[in-house]
Length: 148
Image 1 (cartoon, rainbow, N blue to C red):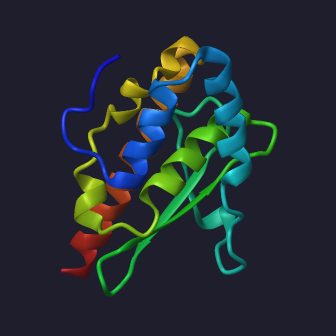
Image 2 (tube, one colour):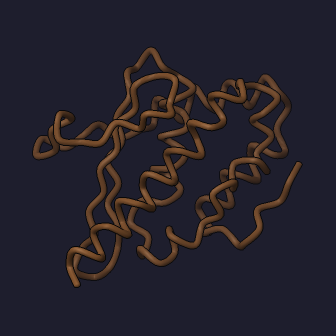
């Protein structure tokens, strides 16, 4: 499996390592587990105002905000029946939530390749994982530009 081109944040690295070391069935079970661990949207976040990640096979919505301390809040939402997409969202959420914007922007776009997910999900779904991170990074970059 490919190794990420840059160091990952600790929480995300632990998730990547767990998946990489797991057999196929455990990877599938872990994706379902992460889908259940995706936090619900807070009451003040409206899905209608979130951005849909077009490249995802199932509907996935993303919004970000940057606090005055430079840390990023992530809001992700996908239907419960879309376990792979929700699982990806859960991995990203749990791996990156609350980190400084610069740290998230430094995460390699292909970090998920080292997880070995290609053996359990289709290439189209893998592109969705890539698109989730790219959308988050773009939103962070745009938010920073608009605050300058």
